[in-house]
Length: 405
Image 1 (spheres, rainbow, N blue to C red):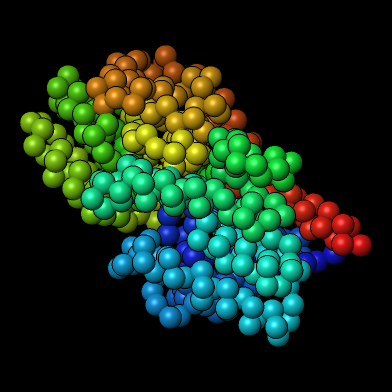
Image 2 (image 1 turned 90 degrees about the vertical axis):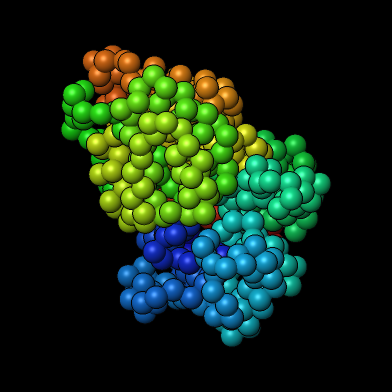
């Protein structure tokens, strides 16, 4: 066991409670760091009940208070652009009072600050990328995100590890790691850790819903632009045409993206849906357990190809037959899994894959569900993934210290 480190943990998302997407990972990473005796200082947006959160996780919180931060905050993208400048100053001021041993950044936005701090303080830096953040913008309308601008931002994001000579990178997927390596960043300094789930919060359901009930097609998450586009809409049209009794269940906050999709889908005769609104993470599993099929109808982009999507992991863990577009990151892991069907990037084909599950008797897939769930529980629970990430971080620090010596 290495000597305890003082770690500056940088994030642009509220640390607790997780707000969705990559933010859930931060809690488990910090828990693993503190379990090993490291002193963790979390630099991030102000959160409610900060004292209780700091005590619960055994960390020191350094709140950013100049403006509200979060995935649902107004003018979010402009705030994200300015945030690294102020984050760098916060960490540097804290380090002047009591130096840190290592900086660990969460997401690309904080990686900018971490890179500048490496130059300023000379500390080892590990950058963790739970996604290719700007890559998702490829699916945004051109009038909002012109393609030349998006591609320039993607190049900048992918350049961060090399630009600032990060000592190590934790990557969301092998696909993301390969893209970094293709840009010249040393493959030996990249650790693909994937994106996990809390196995305790997503147990294998004891049994699927009765065949006599109307089928329920479920999707959960943050419902951003790349989640619900033309593929999802065409899939709904295909399914409703053949199985009009089907109910589409959306578990999560009713975002502008979801509201737009529902308005468009309600023009389809016979479309039926449930929209639960915000659902606490611990309660999502219950919404999945009573469904028939889980879906991941992501539009194609560099961001979605690099993302190791948590939805598919949680569906399989619950024992839910799943349909996903052919995202390179998860297709590599799940291509042999009997509980997962991959469509083309085509809404009609996606809908036909849903229908194929609806027409398959439970006996045709139920025997494989337990083995599929056991596999993700053993390999993709947050605990083993975060052990891998912190093992890597400690090795990076030890190697840097040895090199300095």
